[in-house]
Image (tube, rainbow, N blue to C red):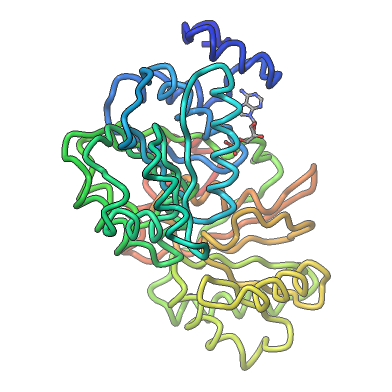
Length: 370
Ligand code: AMP
């Protein structure tokens, strides 16, 4: 499918797309359209910037009939207030020629005002999980008419600790509904959520675009356990001539802290760490010190490293083997940017060998993830 006309969109949507100046659908839009339209549950692995908002909104808007009912039919859950505002704005531009009501709700503002807005009726409600749940508990927000639930950036939601609210919301929603989920990285927590609440979802994944794999030398080392990983890592990164700017990925904040403690004695003055339990100021400072070269080594979890545009990273080290190949691709794409040579190293224990299988759709010659 190469053009929007293949979607056979209603003319109001075509006009809006024209106004926005979009020539052709992005890969995620092509992949998601028919699945979302079919009503099946869907899980998409895609980052911000891939056009995922339009990917789920186009088929939803194509299908949404005019209504005057008060209770919303579409619920969209996003992790932050900024994203609520952004998604509402996007929907308004996509639905410019459609008679449609969309409302954004988020915490940190007066709930009574939002209760009044909800009472006026909406077709689509976009919200953060906490406020969304509070509004439904108060009785102001009725969930009985929800036909489709979109959860965007679910990995960030988990990282912000929204799992209990999400689970509560799932319990309140009508059982017969379509679930649509997007995440930039897949984690075990996300997988568990899908297992519990989704019905045989179709999974689609968009490779990290523009990852210059040709520029990245990939190596992997079998290592028995955490301590041997620390020893090998220490051995490698003490070579300051080659390992000039090293980004180390770990799968959880717990391991990030453990590894930080293990490395601090030897590398303390050149070491930084970022994960979601660190304050925002601390994280900003750590990233700045790494980027400017004050710190040579930065430890990060998958979720935190998203969106970091760091230059001239000589080595990306995968301290553990990601469960999902998308995460590996995302991690290694941090080195070898803009025509530069990059290096990536993967550590794997026997237990992690399973995640390193060859049936992941990678070219065997290109990377060690097999
Ligand atoms: P998103 O990943 O949804 O945050 O979208 C990233 C940006 O891409 C937004 O500014 C969209 O307006 C824009 N965009 C979405 N779809 C297309 C498309 N088919 N062609 C060009 N730009 C697009």
